[in-house]
Length: 288
Length: 225
Image (cartoon, rainbow over all chains, first blue to last red; front, side):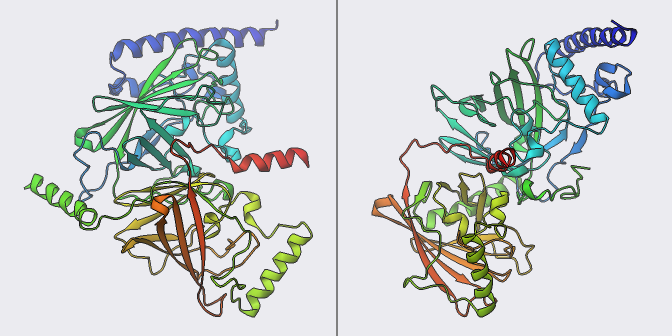
């Protein structure tokens, strides 16, 4: 083993230790995963993976994402269980771990894979992931889309129309997973209400997508649980997401996101195959 | 005051639905008797102008030689309308107060909005822009703002950006069938507006749309060739 390898190994071990500390801090700092990160947490977010100081492991910074609906927009539907309409993600993270800048609790093999993917990206040779081939982004990554979504709601179904690459998800409310759901990019989703919270369970995902943009890996054993509820009088939709994967993860983890109610926005045409969207959209630059 | 304003808006939203017990077209539908080429209601060829006829003839000749490079759908670009409605794969209609959502198996979503006007100077889209209204028991969908790169049918019938479509959707056989009469208006391409009809059968309750990824085909092709 040469010196270089030793340094890499040392850094990897330090990464794991730091990850554990970060994860513990996050868990301690917020009993409820729905609690916003503190200003301090945001200020001290790692600029490189686990603050390794290694520029080849630098993470891509977050995007601002959507703002709230402008004044004078149509008011949100007062029914707490009516989610119908256009919503737009606030903020955008390239790494979807348990906290800002913290990666998923990956097993060592997949931690190395993530680091390799980040290094390749930083070297200008990113691994061609599903989205670059116009395949659906998989989960949870699709929920992090910086483009608007439109929810179409009927009593037994919540249909999520994504502007990004015209992805469609269907939550069968009160439904059951098929005995053999197979493996698809967006899996099979069933949902039920717990009070005013819609709980969505998704299985049957293939392993051809990443958890996120940076390349946290998931397997075809991945299971996603999403909990959606309207907050702030319906002006915001909160999503608490739990990622479960006994193959790639040491343990399940959760994070939360906010979607803004945006009745002023119309979901429009996004054709991935045409590669036509590297331009500001509604004033927000989402790609470079 | 604020609450009152909200209630007034809700009442206004509820009114059109209450005043007109509109049929519900919601469900998953698939075409009966798929045909690749469009014919007019009386079974004739669409009235193409000479220049458009020449383009169409070119498409037919190329296809006969196995060359479909004129057809963007081969590269997984959207079918456009009305072609998207004419394929053998199912689509779902979700009828809501805001509009009618046509969600196709290949995940293309065509939305027709109620209480809206067609834009006079639309940016062209693959699926154009569509507005919906009720005419008795018929749902009428008017569409314009199409790109001229799409084809009207699977055989390669061309059109221009001046294309306008008017579709009349009516339920039949106690809601088991759906009939759509479409009028095609495109003065750059046709000598006169013309119409065709397509009928659809309702998929059984409980049918769940499978995940279809067009791009899979492209990569499979690349891997082969």
